[in-house]
Length: 349
Figure (cartoon, rainbow, N blue to C red):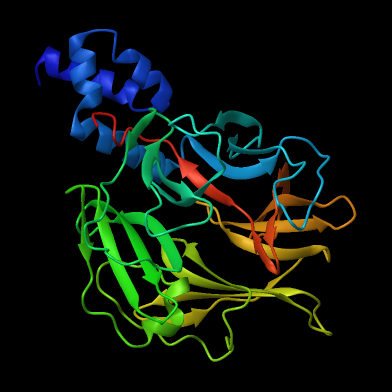
C-alpha cells in the first residue's frame, strides 16, 4: 500500500466520524476534500456508519416551546408556540430548530423520514399540495415535479415517504380518493425525479388504504386474531423487522399492557407483552431507531404530553423533558415524534 493511499484511508476514517454540518463546512477547505466528501462512496460510508453505530441520531419532534399552552377547539394552533426541533437522542437537549426550508411561515407536517431525508408538505393535504424532500443537515432540498397523472380533484389524500433498499431509491407514495370512492395511487422516485401511476390496485386496498405503507407492489398480510380494529394500532420497525403495536389496555390481573408482534417469514410472531411500569402512560406512538418505545404521559390539567423512552426488554424508562404538541381536529389527534439520523444524502443535489 502506497503512502498516499494509506493517508487517504486515514483521512476518510477521521472524516466519516464527523457530523454532517461539519463536513459541509469542510467542502470549502480544498478541492481534494470537496471531491472526497461529495463522492457517492463517502456519502454511503458516512451513512452506513451512522446507521450501524447509531451515531448522530436525534429525536425529531413537534413540540411546545414553553410549558404553557392554550387549546381552542376551533383552531388547534391558537395560543400555541409550536416548533419542529431536533433533540439529542442521549441527553434530550434541543440541538436545532427547523424552520421551513423555503421560508414559509405556514405550519407544515413531516410525512416520513429515512437516512437523513424528511418529506414535508401541507398540514391538510390536497391533490396539488407541494411536496418537498429535504435534508436539514446539509440544507438541501428536492421538490418533485407536479404529477401529470392526475386530472381530477380528490377529497382525501394520504402521503408516506421512505427508502426502498432493493432498488436503492427514496420514494413517496401518495394515495387519493374521491367522494365517489375512486382511488388512485402514485409513486415518486427520487432517483428518476418522476411520478408513476400504479395501475394494479387490489380490491382490499379500498378499505385499508389509509394505513398502508409499502413499495410499488401490494402484498396482503393477515393481522393477528387479537387485532380486531385498527384503532390504537401502530405499524413500525423493531430490530429491523416490521412490527405491530397495540395500544395499552386495562387488564385486571396485570394492569396496562402493550402487545407487540414482529413479521417473520410472512407470519406474525407475538413477543412477550410489555407491562407498563407506571400506570399513567396512556399511549405509544412508535419505536425509535435504537428500538426504544416512544411513550406518552398525558397531563390533562396542563394540556401537555410528556415524551418518555422505554427499553422493551429491560423496562427502563427515560424521561426526555420534551413536551409534544397535540394537534386536534374533532376526535382526531395528531402527535409527531420520530427518529432522525444525519446524512449527506442530497449533498450534490
